[in-house]
Length: 253
Image (cartoon, rainbow, N blue to C red):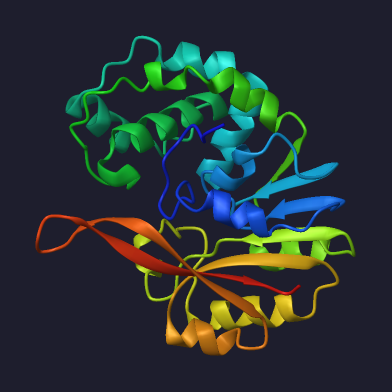
């Protein structure tokens, strides 16, 4: 199934290639930088134990509310119009301390769906109804029913869940593009990329890692298996046609 939200760096176009690389017969599957969960939702099940993690607390709250209270999310959005005035009102009130978790989740979902490029920053003038886009929410809730949802940084997750038989899928902010991610809860600079490599280098389990094709990343992971892949880019070239964007898939097995 598809994810129920778009997200910066989402892996909709690469999820087939990524999952084809996954080893068979794993005991534990962990998404370290979960985002919209495009890889997670692509399969009905990867392992007996599955963990979704993201450092963004609002995103994690949305996933938890969809898992446990999807009907309440639907009720919150049922009669809300897709309009700039509503987007601006939510923008002004999203940090109110008297909101329930369900209200926060509904606002966050609405802003993802109605903002330009799912950036949460400006109204996108999209005609689609956020409520109608929730029609697969029950299936999403059932998929998440057996998934542990965490809100930790990658260091904690790699230490907490590492063992033989674990597969970590990592999709960190891409190098030199970190500023376009919503990293309000955690900075991710060059030092964090190096620390991620150092920790992955010493895990007991296996990892599959997605990155942009950059010389720094290639040098950082030169001791591992690196595969080049391409996907279509959302950016148009000078002739108006869509270009191709090169990425790397890195693994330790």
